Length: 324
Image (cartoon, rainbow, N blue to C red; front, side, top):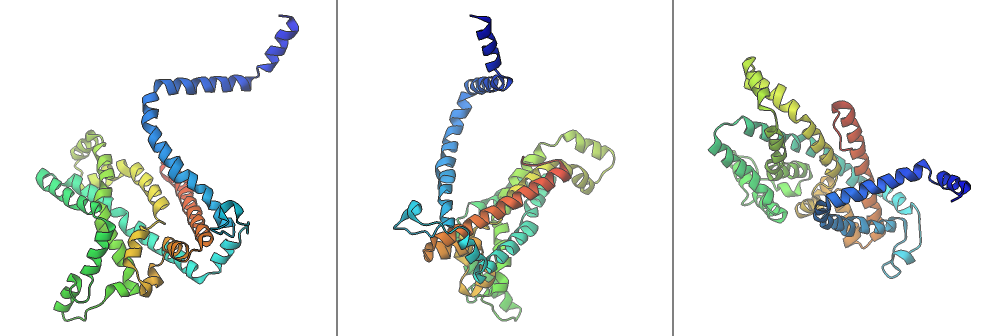
């Protein structure tokens, strides 16, 4: 080979090309080394692609005057017209307001309860009673929301409900709680705490189990009380787990278990019960306004992503813990 040809080959093999070759080689090596793990991961990745990412192509409905007969491709583009319609709709504004208020209540009242339960279980030393209590608080998680809604409605019934029966014992008038807007949020949040707090405490119990026992021994030697040990050892050690779970909770909090809300609410409680997802259900599935519903869903998704992004940045600055 001539000197000129060698020079041309040397110039063609740029550092960038060499970098990509090394990267491809490392990917192939990693795939060969852990191919069993990737085979186990494949079904879940396929599920995500088919049921989560592929349906995202339908988000373009939010920017079209959608018609079932014309389909997505045949429907004309209208740009941001549907978003303008939503922002001018008083019912949608009410749903956004209710979503944020209810989400705030969920974060303030529901999120700390599993942490408190986990810390309490960790402090309880009687193994038999501890396991019995854990089983009791875990079980409600496995109750269907349909059954839970029926239980709540029966408990709050003005005729045969336990709550109204107790109220009547004290000489007060019975109330039909499920038709009163001011009681919907406390009932919804309270029943969610009862259902999910025990099961969610498992994550924090696992985090507590990973704490180095020597930290507790040192604290006891220094004369720390159980309260001080809990405050200065247990809580700081599980703080990274708390922050990660808080970020995840913020990302999912706008969903609010809307199926449960649909089972509980009625027109008289729309004032406080109607949220973005129930608005989407009524407008999209019941009203067949699929483009408006898609726009509302996209709005909800963008707001949720923004909340997660901001919470992640704040967590990374404050506690050096973040999802990414």
